[in-house]
Length: 85
Image (cartoon, rainbow, N blue to C red; front, side, top):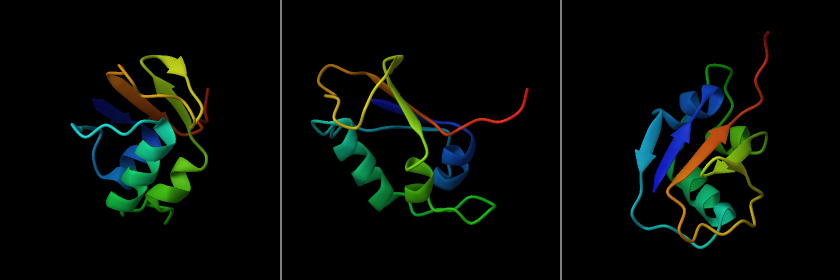
């Protein structure tokens, strides 16, 4: 499964994407595991876990809650709030 990070999530993760092979059952389990593994911070000092608290998540292009199943999914997008015009 591919995980793509955008904006502040990318900054705190230290990469724009990664591929994982050990896919958990739910989005929430995936996010908890990544928050434990990725310990970087944004330039403003926010940890990856703190950024995740503010994000929207897409599973294969669909807005998804933390309880969503990852069965059969191929991509997760992690989207922090965006500003600008």
